[in-house]
Each structure stands twice: as C-alpha cells, then as structure tokens.
Length: 113
Image (cartoon, rainbow, N blue to C red; front, side):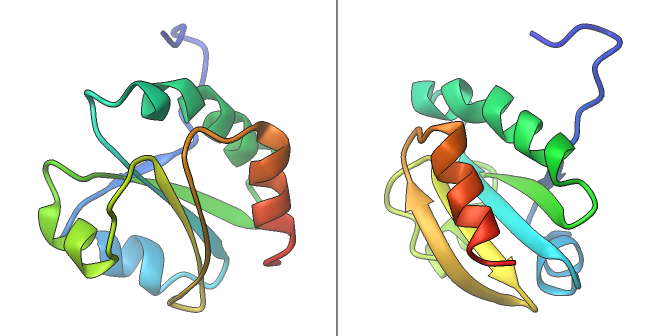
C-alpha cells in the first residue's frame, strides 16, 4: 500500500488512451499487462514504480488491466500475466513474462534505449 507522500509513477491506460500514451510516445514505453486478481502482477508493482522513478526521463511505464481492456490483450497476444512489453517508436520491440526481478526489468529497459 502506498503512503500519501509517495508519487505513483506508472500510468493506467485503456483501449482509448493506448495509442496516445504508448504508440505515439518518443521515449521508451514499458507496458505492464496485468489484472487485479493476479498475485505476480501485484508482486512486481512496487518494482515497476521503482523503475519508473529511476528512468523517468527516458521511460514511461503504462499499465493495462487485461480484464477491462480485452481488445488490447488480444491485439498483443497476451496469454500470461504479467506480460511486460517494450514499445519504441510505436512498435513492440521486446518483452518479458512473469514476476521478474528489478535487475531483469532494468536489463529489458537498458538494452532497448
């Protein structure tokens, strides 16, 4: 649970905002496809916040609730969650699946800068 003084660095996106928040961005975007009932998704949420803060100048982190945005999950062939996808210049260029470590997330991000 976040305290009142902590800033949430990730952006919730949906079917309507995905194009603007992800596909049209000039900086790297990590998209977390997740669901409220998913334990591993909740497990990596603080790690994603940490990553968002550390790389805030060069990286946006967006979260897509697969239950509320099934079209996006189908479009990007999300079969397991959490599914973490890197978008660069509007194209999905890399991905990881599962509750990965901060180091694995940093490797995913830095190899795509």
